[in-house]
Image (cartoon, rainbow, N blue to C red):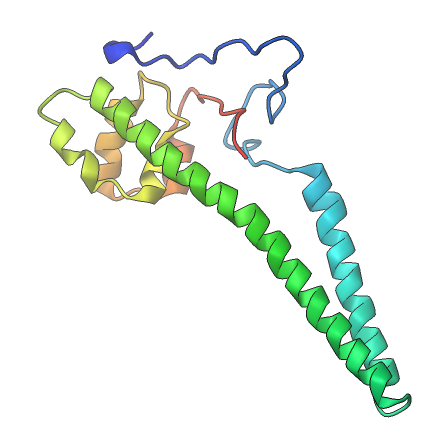
Length: 171
């Protein structure tokens, strides 16, 4: 347990429950989240649907009755709308997650930083706070200081972490 009651270990899960990501050593190289159902099934099917809609629209243009052209245009519009909806369905939970991370990291910084440095917490950008979530309690104060002084990006912060604090709960 870190200073101020911060705990970097995760509680065990109730029986029968699983994490969103498998328990494996997490590093900068492998921390990206791939959701197989979304990335490997839903998105490819939506893009195939878009391609088929475009091909159908090109095929019926100038050849078939006007009603076929209207249906083909409507199909293309719906294909685009479905892609937009799928993108938003993925973006909205990630944005909410980012807001929670910002709050969590501000609380963690407040608990771990000396009182003289706490007034600098609001200077950290959303991007920096999100990058700091992978830093263990021991590295967080020094890394936050470096983020302030050197204006580090999320990517720079993640690369500077020596002992990765995994996050298996993210969306």
